[in-house]
Amino acid sequence: MRDPAIKKREAVMCAFLALFVFQNGLERISPAFSHVDELPALLAVLYLATHPGSLRRLRHVDRGIVLALIFFAAAGLAGNVVYRYQTPRLAAIDFLTNFKFVLAVFISKQYLTESALRYRAVPKLASALSSALFGLFLFDRVFGIFPGEYRYGIRSNTLFFDHPTYLAGACVFLIGVMTLYDCRRYGWPIAFNLIMLAFTLRGKAIAGAACYVLLYIVIVRMHSRLKVWQILLVAAVAVAIAWNQIYFYYFRLAGASARSVMLSTSFRIVRDYFPIGTGFGTYASHSAAVNYSPVYTKYGFELVYELRRSAEGTFFDDHFWPIILGQTGAIGTACYLFCLYRMFRKAQRVRKADVRAYFAGLFLFMYLLIASVAEPAFNNSIAVPMACVIGFAFRLGEDAGQDRRQDTEQAVPMLPPPSA
Image (tube, rainbow, N blue to C red; front, side):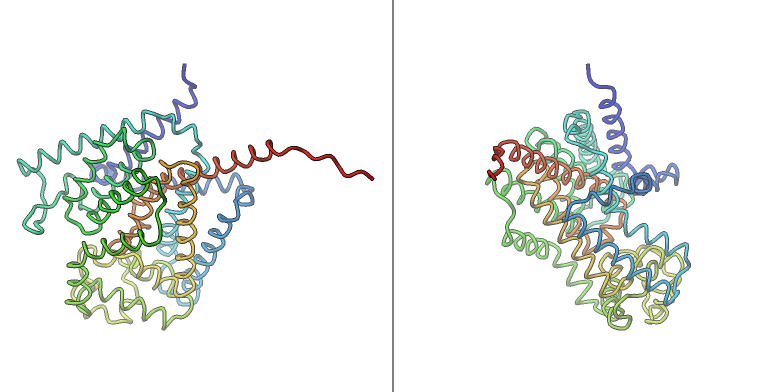
């Protein structure tokens, strides 16, 4: 007879898995579903409020991340206080948006333990959803029931999602969950998701699928850890796959496309507002678009067709690094990069504890890094479920490391005290 507490947690995890995968579609039924990705952040805030001592128990590597995030937040808030380019409400919303990812990592580390690997209903549900989506994908290939734009002479795969980006995020999340439990046992459902990723025809999704294959070869087949030259290889492959889009937006349309203008202007802001930036909710973020930021007017965005005040679409929040550069300046950008670097190092150490967790966590982390070039990846709703898997991988690594230290301490014989 299974422990009722384990069954309850398993049911909660399954419910969250389904909500995360179908969040974008469920938002059409009710706007309330748009806040699903905010639940882990809310739980993290409540946990910190009721367990103030939890921060003091963080290990050294976590304390470094926390300190970097404090300076990151201070840089953005200083810009809000000094320049007052955005309303306090929208600045606060954007502030929380910038911390959703790390808060989701934190709460999954605190809530999930090694016993969660026994929740067999979770990967089975991920497998079933993957098979169902792939069946729908095949049906759509034959009958064309869902809309999709044509790229390279092929109709892109969107299914019932608003944009291929959301479908790609759901596929990557499902891959991460099944890899965490057993990539070989769930090989076919993982392959289904990789095929659907490729058929979104987005450079970041294709690069993500290629990244997974490379990691599988290195980690599973070669029984090795990812090395620097392999990371550079992944980066080179990603650039090669997305080169047509990179050239089109940043070279051919330099100074005319929304993406190129946003990126180049973010570097000007780093210089003009050194060292703190213009503040949360003021540049390249959704809040800056909702209440047309005075920063846009100052830098002449009204003269750019895609960035004028009456422009429609997602041109204003179709980025990530311009958000960090513009809103938090040199200090905030350096701190955010440091935080990601420390998290990557932490993910690398998980291999000694659990290869499956290492594979899953590293893949999701690298996908977000790839996607951050073309979307607000770490601030997106799709980043939250991935953060939960990454946080669980970190927890498995820490638990295993603690067990090894305890075994070592028990194995060392106690020496008698020196004689007087």
